[in-house]
Length: 473
Ligand SMILES: *Cc1c(COP(=O)(O)O)cnc(C)c1O
Image (spheres, rainbow, N blue to C red):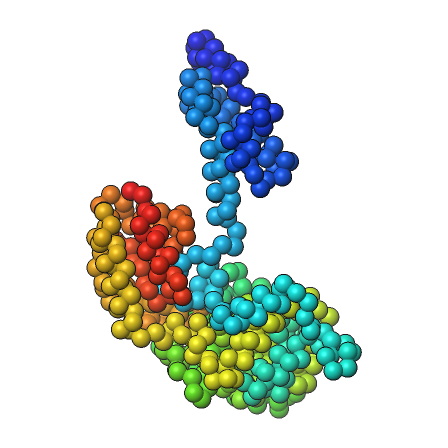
């Protein structure tokens, strides 16, 4: 470093204001409104640190700093920090990916009536663990359990925070310090670090593998049964398919084997498809159904609340009363129980199913949208994009996905707007939309940006068009 360089830096360092000086600047105070004094001081300190580092690296000199300060650089930096912060956390976005259940984007959007019930429960007091008639203490999920039993045909039910919690509760109740037999073909990882063998280990269960990766027969389970067996567990492989020469044991056969040896049986379904009379069937191939799983006679059937069921995050456990009572008596249940907001949302979602309005539940409704309606929406998006400088858009047949580990090999025909931009690559365009306000999530295919209208909810089309118009090249 030359001496003059070093002197220039010292000169710039000397021009740096102090936090106290910045705090006397009206514009800074205005930009920092809504921050506590402590936070404001910390933020200004960090902004000054950034400038100091830039000077140190020779990226900012005295003239640059003077100009920056006179242009209100401190207030602008503070405002930018505030904007960046408002984009963090759990903020709403527009989902134009066409993936209906996307864990990264919050899985199932609940029905507006469920959302309303959740809001009411959150904002006030509610009947939670008290009987309204007698004023005595009761169970928080008593009504919920009665609804889910009515819908699924189960004798009893209980609900916890998510399906991973359901599996944990089942293992901890029936297989702690005992053996749980699982088919080798079902020792899967469900994503989000949910690995069946790891969960079993943490629950204190000894994993006993039955059969092979592609074929497991009933005799493979019965060979492993012994006086230490606590559970026969079946896991739906969800996001994974073994095809070709395969064989798996039906839940009915597994339930019979368990019954014969008085060993509890459990079936982790994950996605929780709830087909019943009067509901439009979902285009999901052979995805197992909750009602059939319950009818198979296994003691406990587990499924997620926020996958195909279409409610808030939860894990349902339904089945035989004796088994469910045992789950309820496990102290671990207390650590996994749902809060009032989730319970309110689940109750409302169940009521929609029972009122014959299951097709209105967004997770289901989005999967069965009319292709004509989707085509019209895609055309509207493409036309709006073509009217904006730089964009070229067409409507193309595309494929949506159910997502969230349900039916990995299933795609649903859709129509999408395919966008390219004169000066932005598809990646840059996708990033610009993600960073915009509102933030839009899209897909990239064949070197273009794909906007699939399938996953647009009420009001999202307008928000999406606004976001496109705001893209800066
Ligand atoms: C998704 C899934 C889980 C985990 O469910 P969460 O509700 O996300 O905890 C467990 N088992 C199977 C088979 C799944 O598909």
